[in-house]
Length: 121
Image (cartoon, rainbow, N blue to C red):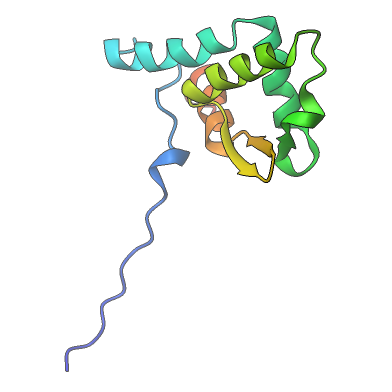
């Protein structure tokens, strides 16, 4: 029987930011496209409020019933949450009749890294 080999642990890809800090080097076309989708989704004040409500909610996730008071109708809230989810900023899980949203920590890390000065991440 051969001795067992210990394999190194790899960090999940999701933890790595999608793009380097803007001050490190120019973004490639693909990096710019991915980054623009994220920031475009946050360019709407209602979406930004919803994203903030989820990100700051106790436990790191929020039921849609807890965050829908942003001054627009429920169908509009659902539309904006879908846009945030499509941009990769939120994930969701249905529990009974409610949907719970969460911001993946890697998303906040990636967004912060893009706006951080090179060498200070």
